[in-house]
Length: 296
Image 1 (tube, rainbow, N blue to C red):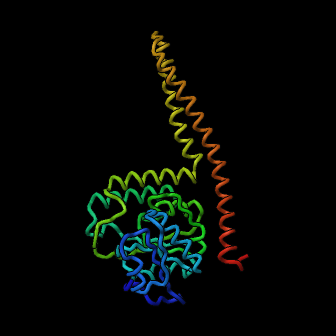
Image 2 (image 1 turned 90 degrees about the vertical axis):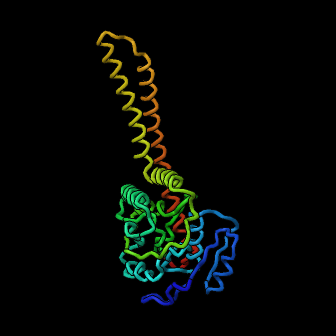
Image 3 (image 1 turned 135 degrees about the horizontal axis):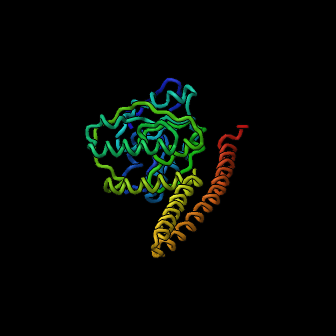
């Protein structure tokens, strides 16, 4: 709290919101003692993603024009907040993500740096953005962008919000930031393997939500292609005078049918995705009417 800036050029009022995600310690008491403007206490531990989502909504209700999100483990240097929000103040972008330049962080192992780089590359491919540090939690959102944020993951919001922003064509950029010395281990996940598996599930789920036809077509196409290849294999042996390999015909038929069915499911999923976009548009209109009643 003491490192948070008291004034920033271009900002009239700076307020702080502390989200207590069902902690069993004196988080709120200490936060208020340190001068926190607002607090939000969740009834039990709902996870990072939900805590972020509830925090964004509370900040919007409090009238925030720019929302800066940072973790409570003192990982990020609060003095970089001014740099973080500058592109939004200039009305150039909707979202700014702090780039930790993970290769320069001393307490990151070679394996962790490699995984961070690979993960960020995957997110860039799925989102169509150029964010080099996808898991950074030091971010700034314009009011308009914050209103469009929806989080379905129970694990982390970092990956999902980038993919969502990319697919909603929100202007998103990054700025280099500094990090502080490590003071404790992360409490979000027990080990790297668990983090990787849960992140992979999140990526598949979120990308499938935005691009269902592409995902189902790829999966169905692989199955269909397998069926075609097995069918060609049977035909090859048949004309070689070997009428056996009936199992290939059976498996080929199954794969062909499954491939077609998965592709058809993709069409249905695409229609559902279109409906979801319409619902999100309605949700955004409702939010604007509730939070900005004078907005046309």
